[in-house]
Amino acid sequence: MNADHKLTETLSILGAEPARDVSDDFMHSVWEKAGQLQNRRDQRHRTALFAALFVVGLGTGIGTVQVPAQASEAVYILGSDVSLSPASLLHVSR
Image 1: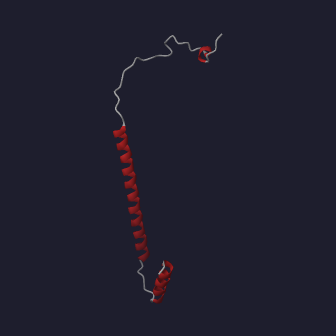
Image 2 (image 1 turned 180 degrees about the horizontal axis):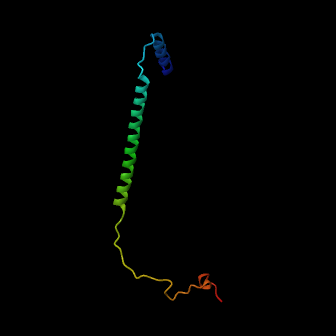
Image 3 (image 1 turned 180 degrees about the vertical axis):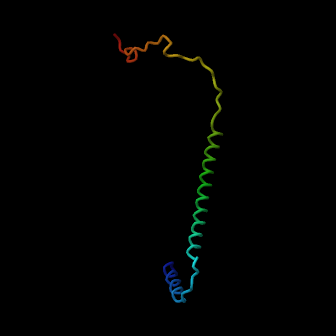
């Protein structure tokens, strides 16, 4: 049997049964269940996102090479004897 035939058969069986009375809070229960399913899905997405960020952060922390810092003398361009004239910056000779 294919799926369309099963669906048609199931709908005909349901259509043959007498209508049942549904409680007043039936739709409320349906929407409550839909909300619970949505909350579970959102929780799974948040958990997956947290796990991915954790793995990326941990991998970055482990993968980073720790290079020792080396001190060097400070160079002050304005105080040194470097010529900052426009001609020298543009490599123009006079």
